[in-house]
Structures are given as structure tokens and as C-alpha cells.
Amino acid sequence: MNLYLVGFMATGKSTVGRALAAKLDYRFIDTDSEIERRLNLSIPEIFENEGEEAFRKYERDFIETGHPELNCVVACGGGLITQPGMIELLRSKGVVISLFATPETILKRTSGNRNRPLLNVEDPETRIRELMKEREPFYREAGPMILTDNRGMSEIIEHLQRTYLREARSFSGQKTSGESSETSAEG
Image 1 (cartoon, helix red, strand yellow):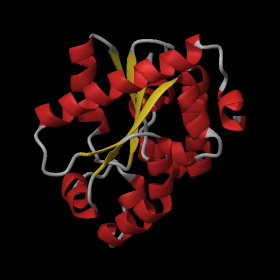
Image 2 (tube, rainbow, N blue to C red; image 1 turned 120 degrees about the vertical axis):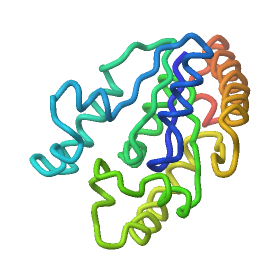
Image 3 (cartoon, one colour; image 1 turned 135 degrees about the vertical axis):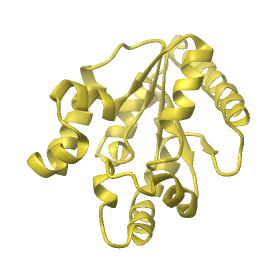
């Protein structure tokens, strides 16, 4: 089944996701890159020309129908998970794991990157803190969390792989038992 990596920008979703996909022999997909490729526009251009709401619709469309249903590691854009119903949609399609990093680490990792339209402001650190405060509850609710600060790539990948395999077994067990999530929630 697919693995969906969610979390704030620059937490390592693409870097770690690409490495884990190679290790698992899965396809790696970055939602932002796929949207840019399909529209032949950069994320900043989409935000400038069509607005954030249009971009969020492109994200939802991609998750609903724009990628294979199996054997993919999907790095989701930082704001994708905040859309109404998106956590449930991702969970219905596979395992969801959140990656975390501190605001200081995120600032360091994004410094000088102009392809982050939400951080193209006078005080990016304050903006990071504001956005993280808004989004953190969604990331925490989405699934298991893995901290990427001050950890080596191999350590993060090993932890991510163990977590994914554990969650996939649980997910598969739920599917084969015949119980739906509605039944589980009522009981």
C-alpha cells in the first residue's frame, strides 16, 4: 500500500521519501512536483496567478485520482493535510506518517529558497511559527510522528521504514477483517 508523508515544509518529506522509496523499490511521487509538471507552472506562479485555493484543489484532485494506488511513497505538500476531509482521504488510501522539525531547522533548510510562496515575506521565521501553530494539530492527528531534527538520514529512513511496515500490517489487518472504520468507531 502507499505511504503518505505529511508535515511542514522542509521536514524532509521529499529527501527521506525518495530514499525510502528506493529502498522499498516503490515509486516516489512529490505532489508539488507533479502539480508543477502537469500544469507547466511553478508553485509560486500557481499561487500568484490562481491563488492558494486553486492550488489546494489541485492537491485534492491529485490525491483522489492522480497517482497509482499501490507501492508509492508520496511526499505531500505542507498544507495539503489541512484541507477538510484530507486526513480521512489519505488514510483510506494507505499509511500516513507525519515528519516534524523545529522552526529553527525549517528556517535553516528553507533559507534562500524562493520556491516557497508562503515564506516570501519580510520575516520568514515568524511566518513559519504562525503556519506551524495552525497546521500542527493536523500533522499530529494524521498518523505516527517522526522527528527529523539532528538525526542522520539512515536513522530517519530506518525509523520510517519500521513505522510504515508496522502501520501497513495494522492497515491490512483492518481491511481483511471485514471491519470498516465506521464499525470500529461505533464499537
